[in-house]
Image 1 (cartoon, rainbow, N blue to C red):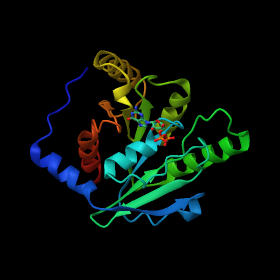
Image 2 (image 1 turned 90 degrees about the vertical axis):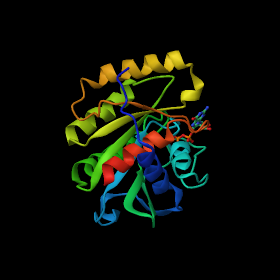
Image 3 (image 1 turned 180 degrees about the horizontal axis):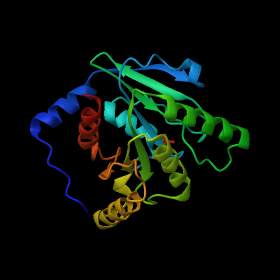
Length: 214
Ligand code: GDP
């Protein structure tokens, strides 16, 4: 495991404050012409269906119903935009990928939207790419990471559901993930581990986001 730089008390406080104010849903974007004006920085969350993306967004902002946890994986095909009055940046929930039963035309539409979004969105500062701690990076994730590399969008891996494995297994998956990232030029080298269930790693993730948008 590489050493993670110490976060000062001031940084933690500033990062937690950023997410303490109410966040609201702005809009769903089914295709690029509906994107809001790129007048502020934005960060996006991507991940396979069921990775725990909605739960993590809700945990970050401490609001249970903000991102809808979906009972039908693969249903959401839009980019969902969230904002707060406390800070001038957008949080973007990207549609989940890798749902085995998704029809081909939906997958194609998803891929086209994401490619255009990643290539064209100047205000996108970083994509947080969520990976289930129990599984690590799978081929379906590698395809997305490669898309991010090709679009030259910086991304950072966030492991989810860290409460579901032992600390030893978590250390192993962090090492393994960091080793795999060496093949990905746009990947940020540090891997974050989180649990929405146990509220672990949230301040670290908030601090990372704060670092991207200032
Ligand atoms: P999404 O499809 O990526 O938005 O995933 P969800 O946030 O809807 O979560 C999928 C499932 O994983 C739900 O049953 C959640 O309760 C569960 N889950 C999400 N995050 C965690 C976590 O940190 N720990 C545990 N144990 N379960 C989680």
